[in-house]
Length: 208
Ligand SMILES: CC(C)(COP(=O)(O)OP(=O)(O)OC[C@H]1O[C@@H](n2cnc3c(N)ncnc32)[C@H](O)[C@@H]1OP(=O)(O)O)[C@@H](O)C(=O)NCCC(=O)NCCS
Image 1 (cartoon, rainbow, N blue to C red):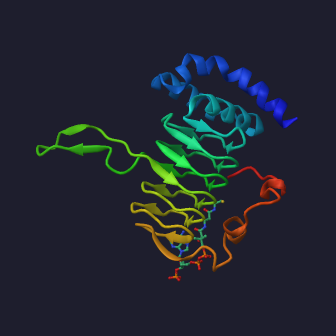
Image 2: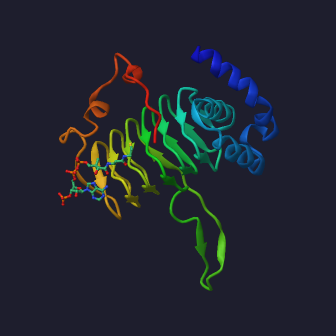
């Protein structure tokens, strides 16, 4: 049933993917990305995955992207079983498999988009890719401007300006590691299990 819905969604979004030249026509890509972000419920989740499958650098069909969330660049890789909550805006990024991103997270393309010359004028636009590892959990409202290692948890409201290593919990502004993500039990299941049985067998709850 799921595979049928995914196949149908690919057919539905195909014309829009062609119109935006599979993500390469930036303004048209943004139009459809924002339009599809407004479709509620499971239908929206399946439609968005199909659209991004056809337009991003790579995107698993088995991802869940909630209401109000969109990618502002096609230079994105989204791994298998990634969940992204509501109202996130994501620029150039690589998101590893099974990572969970809570609502209202911003991932701009790095930190220095608008550099200035000596007189204060802008020098053009600079963007950098942000890499978020596998099995990460990014808390609500975080702003992620640097890389996050595998199995790492970023606390709600954190601002990540320096790279954060694997397997830690990092919180605050600027985000700093405060402990191992394995020791506390928080995220322990996600951090330690290489799923022989898929973790997502458990009942699916839409990301908030
Ligand atoms: C980081 C988090 C996972 C807590 O992990 P934890 O292992 O229980 O950590 P603790 O509660 O022991 O906190 C460790 C320290 O970090 C601080 N801290 C925890 N979360 C914080 C946050 N989001 N921002 C700032 N500081 C935080 C704690 O106050 C504590 O500091 P202290 O020892 O000086 O008191 C949790 O606080 C969090 O932010 N979760 C995200 C929830 C969320 O966004 N859910 C959305 C739906 S999925």
